[in-house]
Length: 380
Image (tube, rainbow, N blue to C red; front, side, top):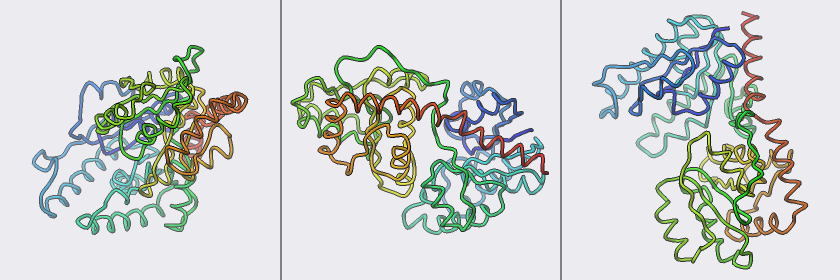
């Protein structure tokens, strides 16, 4: 089976695509990745991709942000043709299109080649076009998605909540769920822990990720000096977060520097609890699942989670942490205290986190899709 894995960026910057490539190769699938040259294009990064890689390009005069509807449409047309032609030249048995922008050229190539077409939607794509100026484009993209999802061999998405959304929105068969979990090979449980009872939130410091809630919980945890609140990463909120922690005299609040992706889980395993709070500020956030949730599980950590559908679905099944009823410092502090003071409950959650990681890992999840693709190829 020969697969073209298609993404409309410079490949390296999409961790889901990198995991796809790794699993295709592990299962002896002949995979070529087709990407699109973007502003972050880096030849050194591309050289790290462990399979044949094709980076499509367009006339540089149309690259970057375009002014005027005609030039923008021309740019999209050129991108579609460049990617479509790159796929067709490879003559794959399966085209795996990552997100809606990749599906458009992938569909044209699949129609020409009469091959299997997979649509892997990493998010609710039409939600990305907000504001009055983008309203027309959003309606157009929704029309394209509604039309194309009925023509693919299989649609894939990242959560059960998103799968139900697509099923109802487009009146289609429920998409296959391949959740954005960690690789089983990345599982790492350290016997060495950082001092105290450390509660960690790692990732980029953006709004709606629980960092402000952790800071505001500092005075609520003052009677528990062993409890440490820790963050690891970087982002635009760092300066204001540090200022607020200083105002609240958060001596037990720790800022760790960012680490390489491959170090994230080993470093997390030195903490005691992981934090995966997502504010449902849009449909994408509401229907998604936090990648960090699986990273914490791979590190053997119980997790404090926000109450969004996929978090509830997973915790109802595995009982690996606490879902807070509302995203407030009070609810967060109560969850921390419960895990800190109830060792039996903590140990059970930690045991179940490992069970989640053993069962819901990338190797198991993506194998379902590879099996489907092989069955489709046999039927062609």
